[in-house]
Image 1 (cartoon, one colour):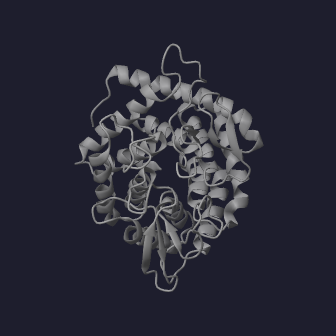
Image 2: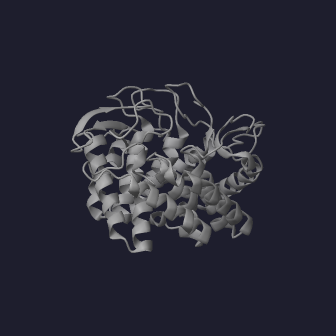
Length: 377
């Protein structure tokens, strides 16, 4: 493992301080809902009332704050998020993987929170109950957020990360190996549905509910059905990396394939565009997700030493160019990860702070600073 030079370590330490300061401000607004996306110039948050698919990342960010500072206030706030999310355990959406792994599982894994354990288990049970045993997949669901084509015959790469480790963790916690088997089959189906022959990833798929056979590939948020939406590629890197670490090393080959595609197509300045078939805008949130994934894969595949080096370069680019303030004359609130592109097709928050971007940047920083192990989450 290549050690960081003192100057980079100083930048990363200072970045964590800025992000924790931002979290303190966000916590004041989050009493009225869950942080969703924010104006990067004013810092004002748009909140969701039920957590949408994004609210869990706020709980995860707070849990990481507790890890790096040891301060009880972060753990207490994280537990509150976990409790509030529990009502979503029965929501008909595959994105409960995001909600409950990051909104409760991270707190349980890093801090042994009893409240987070209860919430995470509720989410895992809810997800498992919607598994289509004939098709071998948890469908996107009728209540999946932000999607036009949803329901019992739809799948989405976004439903692999979070879902797989949540079910694998619950399987061990409850001594119910069938939950890990659901995680395995769910991840395997998404390789078939979403990973193209060249290693690029398509976001979504329609399948036969009786057999699971792939009917067509399409995208909800990418430029086109045959383009590569950056977050789809990043979610695949993360999801299959988690599957390799939590379920079976058999998933490692796919995780490396999609990671290599990312690195081969990433611009020289280390920041991904919102879609690899479009030049602008950039998406810092996709870049942060991919950095976290590369750090996990650098441990699972220790011969890929360049993965950590490339992840470090991506994180450094995010910190030096996009984490406010970035210059002496910058009057924006400190600690905002600017430049996130939520949904370009719908012209929604295309140059904003995004709560999941914040989470994955913080996770990557803590891994690089040696505070947490990359494969722990």
